Length: 429
Image 1 (cartoon, helix red, strand yellow):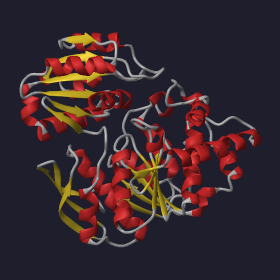
Image 2 (cartoon, rainbow, N blue to C red; image 1 turned 180 degrees about the vertical axis):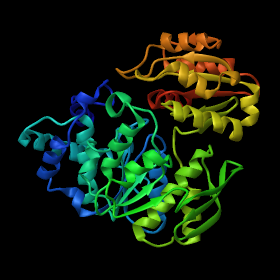
Image 3 (tube, rainbow, N blue to C red; image 1 turned 135 degrees about the horizontal axis):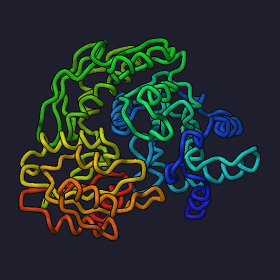
Image 4 (spheres, one colour; image 1 turned 30 degrees about the horizontal axis):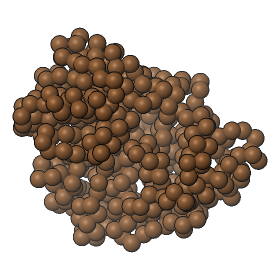
């Protein structure tokens, strides 16, 4: 397995390197690769997801609903927290080391027959598409990496295309305007697709509506989260869909934004079947959803929360969850561990989390070539009047934050999933 991962990691990774719009890959390499594999993506139905925030959570909810209905489901998401196996999942089980090594070995052979050298993400996407065919999934839930139009996952022809929302992220590649980002994301819509549209801004929604879907199911018009109440350990939701109303659904995730994600997920599964879902199936499916690294509580003394908010909209959602789901701890004061990637504005990120609640920031660097220097995050915090220390590692940053957290307060680790992943490992060791 180590040899296979080393071969995979020898390829260019757009997740690790800064790129501009001119650097963005096309679909030619990916089309060539899946053709050599026998076009495995045509062997099963697909639900395809894009959006600025919430894709991973929504994908997990969709998968849970489909599994609860007795289907054999494959799920492809990114990035991973601990192991690359997490990206390729059957039901709730990640691919085994043996199966992943076999797939990568086959791709190494195919690469020699290809006219070009694929990227790391293209290889992982191809591995997922081939594996789902090999294990005969009924449906694959596939999350876009970046954008949609030219993303490696866009070799699929989805029965259902989902859009969670549109915000500012990866603007060097997708932007600079929200309308540009929306057009890129609208690229996953195919003529046969039912589009489940979570974005509600009229000018952006119009871009998706004009993408040529066979049918459009839109938030607020056709579906939505009608009630979203705080509950012990999560949220209690009422969700309206084109097929009915589901009341008092317990979702064991923190943050009111997860109610919106749940509405998209339920609307997508109903659209896939063109029918309502049994109430007990929905309850069972939502009750077991787990999304590591998204408002995840990993310790209680002090309260430690991991949240991979990597853009301003995500930081605002984090702030709202702290205010509602963790009001007491937020009021007592938060020590924040923050490490972010280049291309983000640390001042805007810190402001979005909320300066008033912060007792201090411990800045660190994610393990990525795109990592912003910790001193830049520290300077941003100090410019806002927030005390800040610089740590030499994520582990040291977490230990420092825990030692400084007030009684009844909280430690929040955020800014990048790379930081969240390292912190999660440190707190579990």
